[in-house]
Length: 107
Image (cartoon, rainbow, N blue to C red; front, side, top):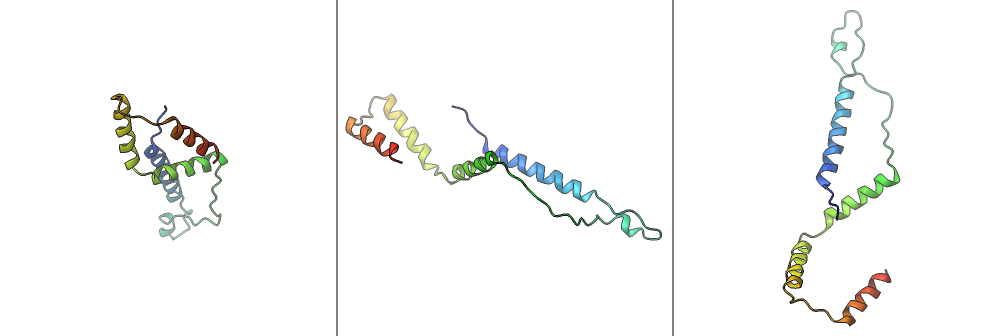
């Protein structure tokens, strides 16, 4: 199974945001005669900012949010069950397996 580093997604978003902020701060109004302060002030943009996110990007965002909401206790339960299976101590009736399959398909 392929693993995804969710922290890398956040780091990439933060890096892009930081680059955009730096690019905006580098814009400077042209100097006017006798006005040296204008060369140090960032230009004020009259344009509004826009962000367009693709459907895939929105799906990734939702999956990341769902992954953040998952309980860490679940991993402990998985490890416990894995150890029981490996030791031959985990037994489930065929009826319970069939019921779980039918419940999952009904969703």
